[in-house]
Image 1 (cartoon, rainbow, N blue to C red):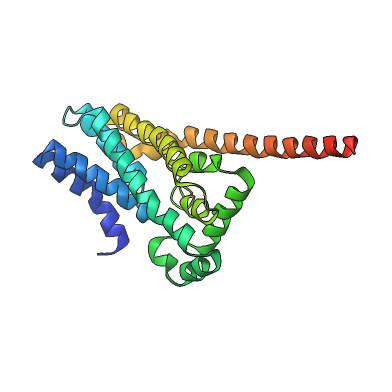
Image 2 (image 1 turned 180 degrees about the vertical axis):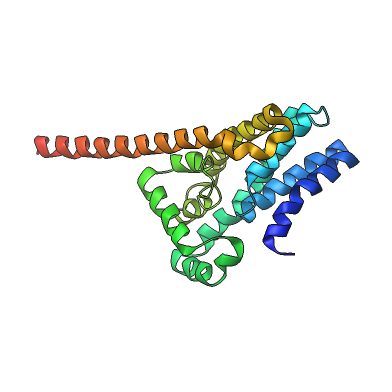
Length: 218
């Protein structure tokens, strides 16, 4: 089974689990979100909206679905964080060049993630959890930069919680059309990109003003 077949089988896996028992359903969502963080090609947009659909059907509860997704996400974020702490950037980049294609990752994406972290600081762990494609890899530079485990967990949980709630609510609203979540979230994705751009502009002006004041006072 290739990665595409595996991804396409996830909704069926969750559906079968929910039909068997609601607690097994929560476990399936937890496992799927854990794997979504380990294997980036698996989209959370496929998992949590489906959970929301079952909430709308009365088969699952909203809070347990969100909690299962959040716990799976947190657990899945730690391996990449650990890799960042234990493996230096050169070795990790070399490994991604050889094997990253099998996991949908490239060394260039690692470089982008590291660059963003250096520019925007620890808060990027929070915002990064809201951006598809950055969600998983943002844990790596956090580990490389030796970000303390407690702030990493808090920022990861906060950003992930917002993303998971949005996706779950979207699934409740869209119902059987939950698979169209990409279209529904497009305005939100644009808003996040605008916010990040504003952060970058604000940081630039802050650094400019700080440098100017030091020059004036010297």
